[in-house]
Amino acid sequence: MTTPTDQDLTQALREQLAEAVNARHAVSIHGSGSHGFMLGDFAEPHRLELAGHRGILDYQPTELTLKARAGTPLRVLREALAEGGQRLATDFPALSEDATLGGALAIGQTGSARPFHGAIRDAVLGVTLLGADGEVLRFGGQVMKNVAGYDVSRLLCGSRGSLGVMLDITLKVMPLPETSITLAFERDENSALRDMNHLAGQPLPLSAAIWLDGRLMLRLEGSAAGVEAAAQELLGERDGQRLEPAEADALWTGINRFSHPFFDGDTPLWRVIVPPATPKLELEAGHRVLTDWCGGLRWLRADALSEADFAHVRNAGGYIESFRGGRRITPAELMTALQRKLHRRVKKAFDPLNIFNPALSKFDD
Image 1: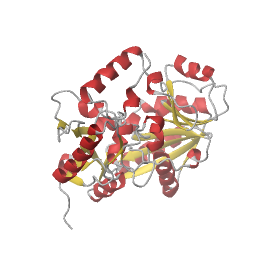
Image 2: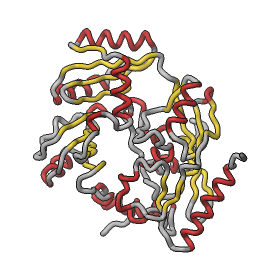
Image 3: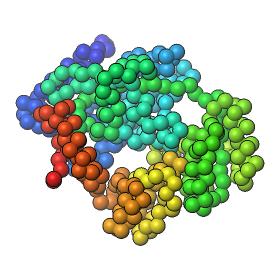
């Protein structure tokens, strides 16, 4: 069987887009479909499938870079990188085994390592984009020193398929740590928040810090000697314990892939972004919380949030997104008037035909 070339795959997508344009059909872009629920009413029924647009195109271990097609499953990247003693540069959340690289960038939400290793957009070096007119556009480069031009590659992170079709993405990667240790400490929520904010400013090999059900959990990664010394220091200062490697792996895998019991069930899941030092949220709604990003991300399980709850979070300098279930929060609700104006201009520049998920960019004002 002949393996399709980049030209073959791009031409097939170009033809599908041309058909949609000629028929005046708006389109939504789909990989594995694991994040489809997040688009909701914004997803167009005319689908452009990228699941078959997969494969690693270039991997340079000595340069710490990898280039892959957008439909490549994240697990394929992890496996290839692990063979070279490397890994993705930060935590890329995956809602299914087949979650894709393009989907991760389109959603743009980063896992627990974000405060320490940066956001997904910080790992993006370059992107090749297919516009509605069939033109192939290349942004960024394949080396970490490439800083010329506008940073369009990062702009595409979080665009949810509204600006064009990502064909391939070039990423920076990082070495696997020699060892990883997870420590757990009994803490109430406010004590845990204070500890997380204090420790984030210390010279420690931290790569994640979360709080759940009365326990503060810290992940230390790096050289064996450095991690062990940090673990001894933290345990000497605080009453805590080490998690067994299997338990720690299950914890972080469950958080990163949304398979942890916290995420189970039909209760709506809300994503709350606040300044990390924000104390415990005093909400009217009964809720359960998982705190991540050293306090900057609060996952809430709550049947409904009141207007007072939304106001409380806004007054704290944050915002609330409906991640799964509950009242859908539109993009317009999360933007200022200036942000909406800029969004429209970017949309018009990249998608003048308004074919890619146009409902995402439709505002009342």
